[in-house]
Image 1 (cartoon, rainbow, N blue to C red):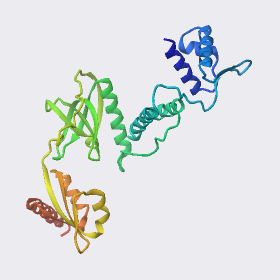
Image 2 (image 1 turned 90 degrees about the vertical axis):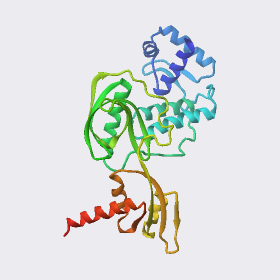
Image 3 (image 1 turned 120 degrees about the horizontal axis):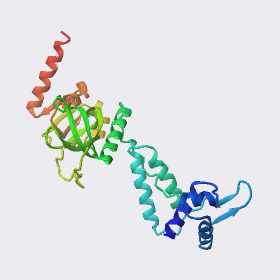
Image 4 (image 1 turned 180 degrees about the vertical axis):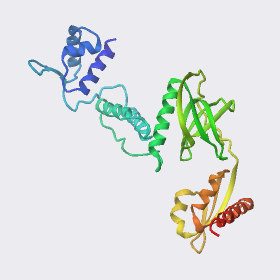
Length: 300
């Protein structure tokens, strides 16, 4: 189709400073005569395409040309570029998103899409998580079964065989959603807990659901409501990590938050050190007390 061919020619010319008619003909798989007719068509339509003869000559397009006569509105152009920026912001994908972004900026014109910058990678061991992310992405797109060792929230270390379906980001962490051959059910796996990932040659035909995070408690964990008193020295964390809190006259805070149960909870509470006291529920207070007493035995 001529329209697609013309757009392809513009795309190539925007990417390169100068291209010969022979190179264009070979790349698009048409004759040189067809290329000459297409260049004339583009020129007639107002596209600033020109030809130079002699050594080093070829077909070129004026620098800083913007395809203003595109069907897309300015809002649609901005949405497209912003969406690709969002993909690139994940920071786990390769450089292809950035390459596409540069080319689209050339074609659609520079839009005001630099209003936000996000990096979802964690502070520690980001390279390892990036490797896991990219390997899982490959397995999902090629529909290959993966095998790995997984540390559950209960401290269990189990070898898994999973049909990976989606990569998800929720609650400050990356998860892989897939069908687990051991549990014979669909499960979420936290990327940071996946070790020794292996992408096998075994294929699967399971399709991922369009929406997997539509329920309130998608991870099927048991949640508890935690009430804590935290000193004013931790004010910066109060504002960063909590929504439901009350500041007392002495500067300390009473905070209330809902958390999934698990061994991680003690580590989280301990990160506040002596500046935090759990007020409720009582069983959590007792559990923390018992753990601290056991820890003290190491220093007796």
